[in-house]
Image 1: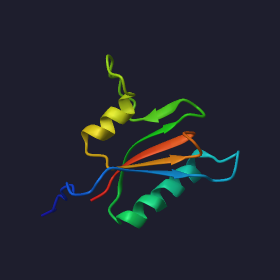
Image 2: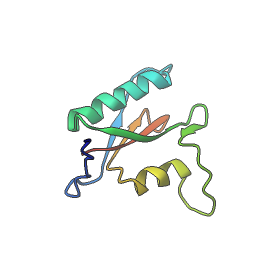
Image 3: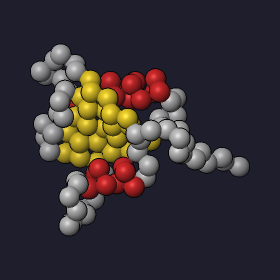
Image 4: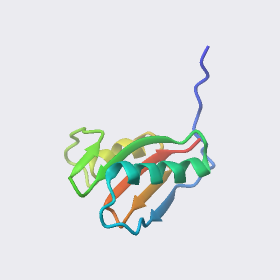
Length: 99
């Protein structure tokens, strides 16, 4: 039987800004930086959504009209995201659920 973890409702939402110091930072490296930062706070950190502002790509690619936030943000928030990692002033943004 598999145990499903529940979110820690005592954990406050947190935002962390990281700066790579590299103007040529690629998505995979930014993702690795964000994952490492999240895992320092919780080994069970789960990446829920992300946005690559350099290319305009984001995940998940849901189309939710009529809201004041992007779909990828709404998706993560509705699933309990409690850590946002911003890499290089918004070039890459990752939203995690920490347990």
